[in-house]
Structures are given as C-alpha cells and as structure tokens.
Amino acid sequence: MRRTALLGSAGTLIAGTLVAGALAAPAASAHGDRDHRDAESIGVAVAAARAAATGIDWQDCPADWGLEKPIQCGWVTVPVDYAKPNGKKIKLAVDRIKSTGTPAERQGALLYNPGGPGASGLRFPRRVTTENAIWAGAAKAYDFVGFDPRGVGHSAPISCVDPTEFVKGPKADPVPDSEADKRAQRKLAAEYARGCAEKSGAMLPFMTTPNSARDLDVIRAALGERKLNFVGVSYGTYLGAVYGTLFPTHVRRMVLDSVVNPSRDKIWYEANLDQDIAFEGRLKDWMTWVARHDSTYHLGDTYTEVRAQWDVLRAAAKRNPLGGKVGPAELIGFFQNAPYYDSMWASVAEAWSAYAAGDPQPLIDAAAADPTDTAGNIASENGNAVYTAVECADAPWPTSWKKWDRDNTRLHRKYPFMTWANAWMNLPCATWSAPRQRPVEVKTHKGLPPVLIVQAERDAATPYAGAVELHKRFKGSRLITERDAGSHGITTLVNPCLNTKVEAYLLTGKLDARDQTCAPHATPQP
Image (cartoon, rainbow, N blue to C red):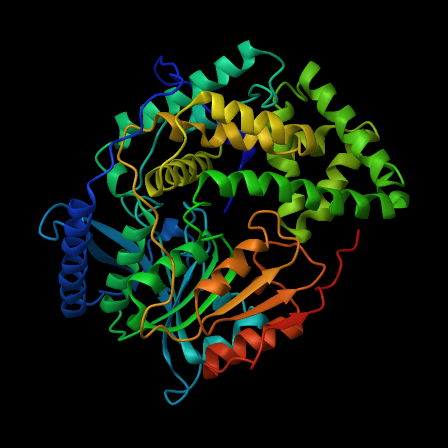
C-alpha cells in the first residue's frame, strides 16, 4: 500500500465540512447482497467469454507511453458493473512482451500488479527490455503482462481535483496544533470527497477490489489463458488474495509479496493505524543506520541525535518553508521513502545532510512538487484518487470524527512520524457519498493451488502480521520471511535465497516442504 503523506490535505475544491457522526451509506440486506453477488458471478463469466472470443489486438505502444519495442499494447473491454454485463463498458490498457525462451519452455502469461491501489503495472514488461537479471529465468517461461487497473492511467482514469492544485505546496502541517487546525483538515477532506463525487461519481460505486479481481479474470480470458499466473506486490497482494478467493480454480501460480492484512477487521481503517506503528519502527532503523555513518552524513552518531535533527528540520520548515515550497507535509512525503525502501536510504540522507551543511537546494528539489511536470502531476493526482476511491468503497469506515480524533491522538503520542498525515489522507472516507461494501472474506476454496507468500520482517507499509494472516487463510501456502529486513517489495531486490525460491516456484510450481527464512539482503552503503 503506497502512502504519500503530503497528498492527504491536497487541493481546494468546493466548500464543505465534515459532519461528526455522519451516517454511512446504507448496507444491502443479506438476501439482496447475495443476489447481487450471484449476478456479478454471472456477469464476469459473460465478460470473460466475450474477451476470450475477441482476444487482444496487439500493436506497437503509443509513443507517449514510454514503452519501447518489442513491448506491445492493447485493450480489454470490461463492464463497469458486473451485475450488468450488457451495460456501460470501459477499456483497460494492457501490455506484454513475449517470453524469451524456446516454445518448449513457454508456460503462458504472467500478470503483475505493483500495488497502490492506484499504481500502473504497464512497466512490468520492461524487466525484459532492461535485462533485469532477477527475472531473466521467469522471462524465458512467461510472457510478461502488465495492465492499468480500472480508473488508473489509461484505463478510464478517475480524478478528484485539478492536478495543479493537488500538488501545490506548501501544505499545512499534518500535525495539528489546535482544534482549528483539525477543523481545517476535516474541511479539506470533506471537500476532496465531494470533488471525487463531482468529477468521477459514476465510477465510484464500482471502484472496488472485487471488481478489479473480476477485471483480472477477464484479462486472463482475453489472453487465451485457462488459468492465471500472477505476481502481486503490496496492495497487489490483496487483489491477488481476493482473486484467489473468488476464482480459486482459475489460479495456476501466484506470488504475493509484501502482504496487506486481508482480515475483514483490518480492511482498511485498522490497516492504516497498524501502518503508522510500523513506519515508526522502520524510521528508527534508517536513522540508526544514518547515525552509524555519521562520518558521511554528519547528522549525529546516535539514533537519538539523528531524530533530534529531524525535529529541528521539521520545526524550521514549519516556521519558514524551504524555498517557499517545502513545509512539514512535503518533508514527510519525501522522508517516508526511506522507511519504504532501503534503496532510498542513502539518497534521502544525502539531501538531508546537504541541508544541515548549509545547502538546502537538494532537499528542496527532492521534496517539492514540480509544477511543470504535467504528466507526473496528473499521474500523482490520479493515483491518489484511485487509492481513495478503492479504499473508501471496499469497506465501511468510521463516520464519527470523535473516533478518528481519539484513535489518531492516541497513536501520535508514540508514533508521530506518519500518524496524522495518514489520517488526513484517509479522512475523505468518513464522508464518502458512494456505497461501501463489506470486504470479501479471504479464504481457501476448493481448487486453490499452493500460493507463495514473501515478506520482509520489518516492512512498514505492509506489516508482517498481514503475511502471517494470509498464510493462515490460504491453506497449503508457503511463507518466506526475509529476516531482519524491512524493504517493501522484496521480489525486486537481490537476495539469492529469496530469488531462487521465487523463480523455482514460478518455473515448476513446487514449494518447500515448510516455511523458509532468508537472511536479509545486503545493507545499503552510503
């Protein structure tokens, strides 16, 4: 799950206030809900049959998509509402690169989702064109297939606010100093929810993980594949878990990397609170590393000293935003990259170190939005819109401001880095006007083959407990734990222990007799 903290208070739309204790959208009756699910099951079968008959008309990718030959692009048509397969339809963008091995080595198509919700998977085939060694073995056996999920990128994109307004900074400090600060943030969240309804209201009821899982099955059929081979990372693990629950007999191989806790009790409000706690722990890991390399960064030689330097930086940016652009919200948006990814440890520390040495420009350049990056800003706004739409639609959310205030005030005392920023980012769900669903009960049904789960022990974005929970729910699955590590999305990292096990599963379907533990990947160097 990708969090971009500074986006939580983005933009100004139309006036509105968050009403404490506002009512959630009414839930369907049990009988009506069952009838609707039955209609959706019929609808996805109809859509998949049509897609299988039509196939995909593969062509060179549009020049502005940034996908070089021999990657090809195409479209798959899906219904907006699977209960009405003959109703309104949208086209999903897909791309592929053919397997690099012999015809005898080929095992079909391997689909990929990088997370979000709201992230594009279209760059997955570039793991072949860029000669990514980790994935070379799998590339011999599979066509690599990426796609933009519904609402994302080129697939009927949704929007909630003008992208220029969305990225404009500096934004208000997410940590409130007063009740007035909280009221201002509540107003922004309510305005954002209204903006989503105004700009994308027709799509919002259908921006759900189960619908994206149904889309995935239609893409499978359009590719001519009898069963799905799938790699999901971050939110992509929840998409995969829901797909495996809804379509157990359609799964062939499935790798789920950095796992969202699939418990109904966690999707999505509680999952965000758990994330706030985990981010604090991983931030400490990084700051401890910075302290170990004080001869390089000069930010302190203990965690306590480095953390104090963060407080100094944050306070300075609050008093006088760096370059007039970078306040505490923007700093959180940039600094959270370090708890997310080990690969960002050095670059974030370098920019911070330069600031401490008297040169703020590297930090300003890294943390401030670029108003001239039109395409990037559109993508950022779209990604946040989809993130919000999916999480708000997937599950009920608390509508009482008192609960949000109580829970986040409590957490902030011990876990101050991300808590309030994350709260404001998700608060539009408290006043969301579109219907909310009850989350799918993720579990094994007859026909589901063994699934491979991989997880770093100290992952901040998707805490380790989520992998354990999914492992319990998917019978016969295997869990590979990367011990004493915390990077997010570990199938992209060089760790021979992990890489060989993932590749062996994709190539043979075989799993170890029991769960495995791998030593951590190499520690970053300054």
